[in-house]
Length: 264
Image (cartoon, rainbow, N blue to C red; front, side, top):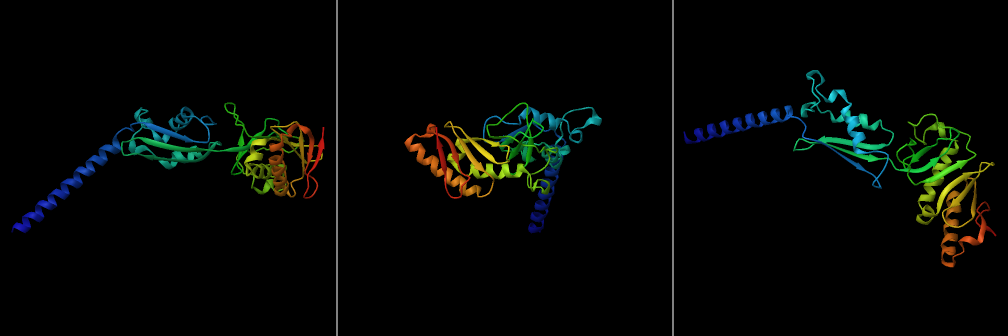
């Protein structure tokens, strides 16, 4: 008998706990979201995106709010994190986005901003960026990152920024070559700091413009690019110790396995 009473009391306690839990869950689901917290991850303090802009985008998603009730208060049970992530993914400067509700009833949104590595001035003159993943990014009025600039005789033009340089349409384009060349430059910390411009000359070949030193690096075509950059890096490391930056007018990499320099 005593055991039966214990089992009954335990069952009543479990039922009560489940009922209370269900009530709390239901109450929480009908509660308003406490706050919206936005975290933007990028290399620097400033960038293409800001929190107020992202919040405006979130507030414009009609399905998140009780519009029929005539209120702009965001209910926990109305939050569709998948919809939020899909909307943010359409922003050309967003690399990745995730969102979820925290235990305190806040909506947390984490965004990773795209990282441009080159700005190309195409035939449209305004230009565009390519990020480290190959995504083509439009120019922003608010922010201009310090990246390698490519200009000169670039007669091709980008018509759709919602593309990637790996798409087949760019297989034989100068844009893909510029992207590959920039990636190779950035793999060498010295060259990444030293080269700030790629000029496409009238022959369709590349000249590199350095940050330090009054000279031009005649790079030539993309052929054997890695070997050319290795030679250039070794040359720069040598001249760093002798402080010969300004003694050269031209550094020519177009000859196989050698560097030909023209002094001033």
